[in-house]
Length: 50
Image (tube, rainbow, N blue to C red; front, side, top):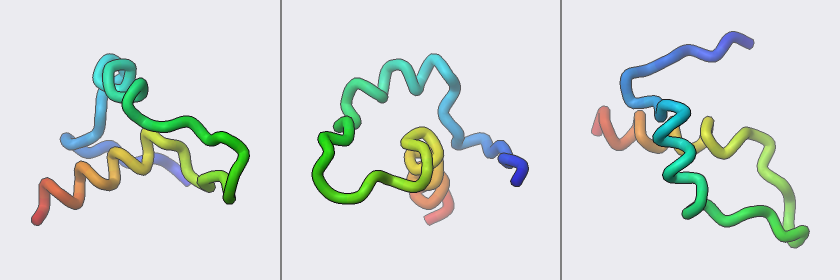
């Protein structure tokens, strides 16, 4: 599946700043099926359109 790009998507530089605030998986519970940047981009898109 090809990744579409939106104007709300984080750049690589922005992700480097934000990723230190996202908790890492510590072995408890189920791992996320999608990458963290993809999840953050989806949240930013939804906030932008609302």
